[in-house]
Length: 170
Image 1 (cartoon, helix red, strand yellow):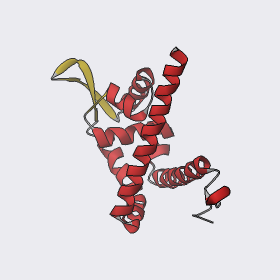
Image 2: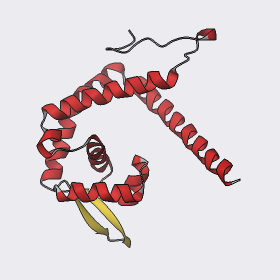
Image 3: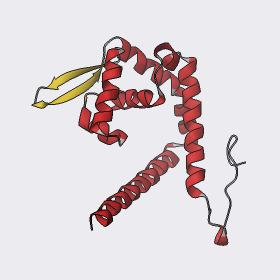
Image 4: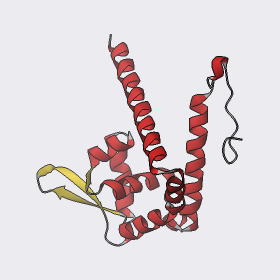
């Protein structure tokens, strides 16, 4: 085993993994599962019946607040309509508030609400403490390298998507 409950990767010619995407997704899934369990144990999901996507959006608002709806949609790689719909439900539950951007009246900024939103942010931070401790245990250098690697993978995926769009337009 390469991690808790994760299978070893199959190796092809030259020792190169033949199933790298699956190995990456399995690890992400494992991290998400741990976070979900901790969030559930803090009552964050069940208390308000938040979906995993709503929790992810709330996490982005915690990190980026104040954030425009379009920036949030871009960060989460979802459509503006989907982001707006999700924010409407989070606002109805009392987690976020919408404000007009004082510098650009066409933009709407999203912030955590002072009551439910701030309490949820505290619970999210608490739920993420085990992950933070695990990151600290592997070291800042290893963590920074992982982020750099993931950013490079994400950039290449975006390049691939851009190329697909160009190919379809031809």
